[in-house]
Amino acid sequence: MQPSSSAAPPASPSSMPPLNFDNPSKIVGLDYSDDHVLHAPSLRFAVTPTPFGAGTGARDTDDGRRLIAAVDAALARRSAAGDNVDVDDLEINFVYGSPRNRYIGMASGGFYLFRHGHAADITSCHVAAWLRFAERRVTGRFTLAVPVLPRQHAKKTAAAAAPPPERKLYAEMPASARCSAMSLTLGNATVSVPAVPAGAAAFAALTDLHLSHARIPATGANERNLGDMLSAGSCPRLRRLRLEHVAGLAALRLRAATTLEELRLNNVRDMAALELDAPGLRALHVADCYRLASDDAAVAVSAPRLETLACADMCRPERLRFDGAANVRRLDKIFLWSHGRPGVYSNAGAVWLLQHCSAANSLGVHISPPVAKNWKDMEEMMSPVPQLPNITSLTIDAQWQHLEASVAKLIVKCSRLERLTIDFSRPCDPCSNPRCFCYREAGWDDQNISLEHLREGKITGLRPSDDHLSLVQRVIASAPALERMTVELYIGKELDCSSIPCNRGHWAPCVSGQSSRRVCNQAYEWTPGKKRDAGQLVVHPGKRSLHPLLFCSKTSCVLPRKRSNEDL
Image (cartoon, rainbow, N blue to C red):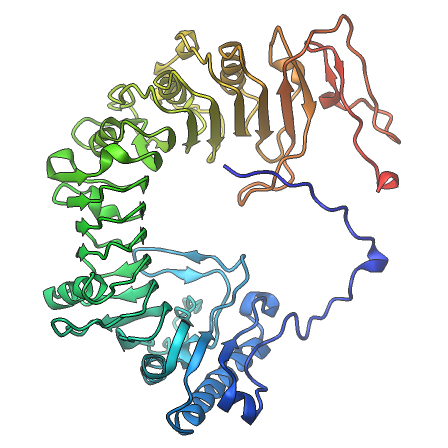
């Protein structure tokens, strides 16, 4: 789902800048002059994106603590200067911004991969003062990012000291009639939502709102007030709304303005009821909202202009109302159980979406079996998936190695497929469980697969097993119009091109983009062409042995030699 780009050649050691372990990158906001604090149109306070030792160094923790004091002093000085001290943009960011600092969400409370030693020094008083300043003074974009507390690693010994009391943050949802964009990452603070007076536009100018890492108290008043605050009466210009890692919110009832085009609900884990009336909505993303798939969940959506639906969790069809499903053109993140026990696991909600979003031409699905030790009572669950004659682009994330049969069953449903991407995202060792479903689905590759319109294919996470290679072979053999097929091996695996029988075309090494799970994997591309009479061998420069990946006896072609350092 992404274009590839050529990588720049590596820099020579002499041209690389010296490493600076004392100051990897600069903290922003500690050295502002008085004139800047009082008159600058924008103020930015941010910890270093890449702390030394993933945040374990004392210097970065001390810098974070100094920045807390600097923010308080600067905002107090600006507020005391008079009435004409508005700020166009204000950023207060205490979360390390490195892409490697991912947040790991868990039911018991998540954590960042980097340690934020300064997190415990941020109190409810700090957060309240920063939100109050933004309400009164910010006219453009306001960003506040407070980290969650790092995990404790106390030694489990009798003499171990008692852990320090856990920080508890409390905040009140701000209401600004002038702020145009707001991003609030609140460190799992408990956020109360005040009632909005009738007819009052609490966010009259707001177009973008992002609320994350917050806990909404489990009361009907807070749920009702949040829905009212985000609805058309309070947010008449809202275009994009994101709620991520929000706990405690059991129901969301939103009557959005006609301007709302994008809604993302990610890890709103306690939400079991969703009522959405959004006449202008174009994109709806729902992920990791697990209670929406429970038996008592209910969903009612009215979005007649919806074009993109990415939904990993959906309630049972009898508790689902969806006005606008027939207009959806792109389905993504649809979750399907490959196998399961009848009455325990169900694909009913996903199947309903596939049936009623019949105009969709692009589909992305996740296929996975349940985690179990005994597969004896498991049954395959892909058969109820309807025919999908309008799907031209299909992306499959197969979250298990032995899902070739399930993948093939889904491909067969798409008779007009033009682009196919398969990712075996969680390969495992060869199965040795005689009760596993993969032993009961032998002969899956005998079923008829017709891919007359397929032009491009890609399979990542490939292992050189018989089933994986058979799947590659079947796709190529069933696609007479195929122009290109790319396979990317799982890290550490090698593949001899001659292991994939093929009567037409040839394989060649290719450059594949890096992914979050795999780096520098071996990749090969198949393109159509005539078969040659005799194979040839190519030896890497400076090596005595033959590389097994450079000889294709079946395709009989010469593959390019690997570049050496002399070529750079």
